[in-house]
Amino acid sequence: MHLSRHLAACLIALAGAWCPLQAAEPKLKVAVTPWIGDAAAAVAAEQGLWKKLGLDVELLNYQDDEDFRAAIMGGAIDLGFDMTAASIDMIRKGSDQVIYAETNWSHGGDKIILANGMTAKGLAGGKVGIYDEGAAVNLLLDAWLTREGVDPAAVERVVMEDEGLANAYAVGAFKAIINYEPQASRALKEGGGTFAATTADFPGVMPEGIAGKRGLDPASLEKFFTGLLQGTQIANDPANRAAVVVAVNKHLFSAEAQTADAIVEQLAAIKLHGAAECLARNRDATGLVAFIAQVQAWNTAHGHGAADLAGRVDTSAIQAAAKALISK
Image (cartoon, rainbow, N blue to C red; front, side, top):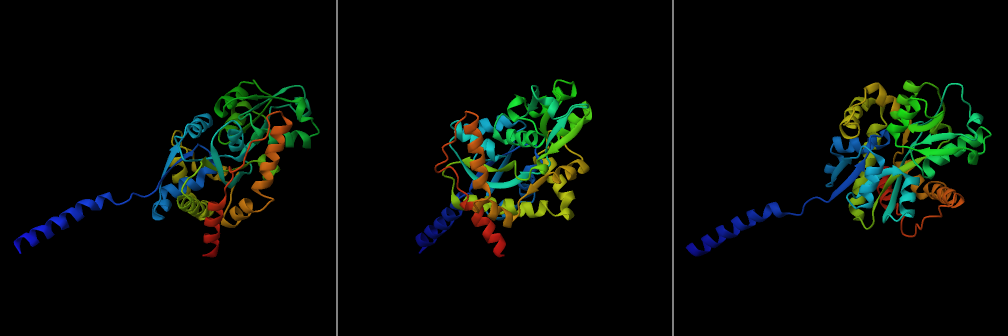
């Protein structure tokens, strides 16, 4: 009898010792940058939306696009927010990643800045500073030049990172640049000129979304997109502006906090897709599929060749998350 009691006590103690070894929540490392288009992720992290879904998401803030793209190439992160065209370019250059979703548009956040006294036609034979060499920015520039009656091939493009590009414009090194917020407004303030056009003038010209490692757990991906779409709903509601300001300053603009007015202005220059629009853009032939074809055509026409996207586009998780939220 005494032995049985002692054995039972030991078994209870052992059972308690094993409790901390229960399976941990799935974890995803997700790259963000100081760009307001990542606002939904900042809100989801700040309000614990992924945690409530049983998913551990760590947001890693990269201050430079090239740094976070290098992290994706090196496998240091699982998912990252980027321009969809840039993700296609990375795959074309050998990155083993998958495009998982379109989540938003730059809708005024990317701006073409002209120096005082300069016109679009005056750029023929000259140079325009741009912050990315791929199709994403070039499609915007081409659309604007074409609208203004200028042959896109007549304009040379010079690539610099966003902050350096703003600095160069401010000292007169360029008569025109394309940059995004907040560096675009800084360039204009310090260098003068006008905003000649923005991505809002060409809706859908610069979609953005999520790409990342191949073979990620489908259930974890669906939870990730569920939390992201919940964050989008919060971010899109003007009543939540104060909470959004706190979230984006903490998770996106940690290196240089933005004023509430600046953040509200930047939010107006993007288009975060809600659940219904996410479903449509990622499912229908007129959405992400059509844009990918446009990028492939641009790359081919400019001698880069098309990316091999076989098995590299999988929007099933974002579609499932969107459908579930719509049905509630």
